[in-house]
Image (cartoon, rainbow, N blue to C red; front, top):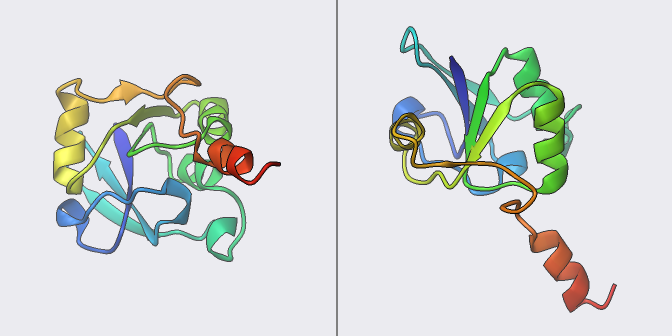
Length: 126
């Protein structure tokens, strides 16, 4: 399986998991079958490029996205591409992949989606 983790830099398995999956500088992809590790720059619209992270991951043949958390819209986009998403990851990439392998991460759902944007709208009265 090709597993993707949003990351803060280019250190491969030793890199830290980024907290905002759409705005991280890099995505680290680990092939759990071969052990191969690839680091891709984030070229999404969030970073001044084109497309959204789920589209980029689909083009990179990713099977699973492991992240700290993400919103409902992103969950739906990943589902549309057939990419499974798991939330609750933290630490280094190697730790996040091990958490996933051990079944310690939750499948992303509407119930556990990040709601920070909704909270901000309520706080600002919109």
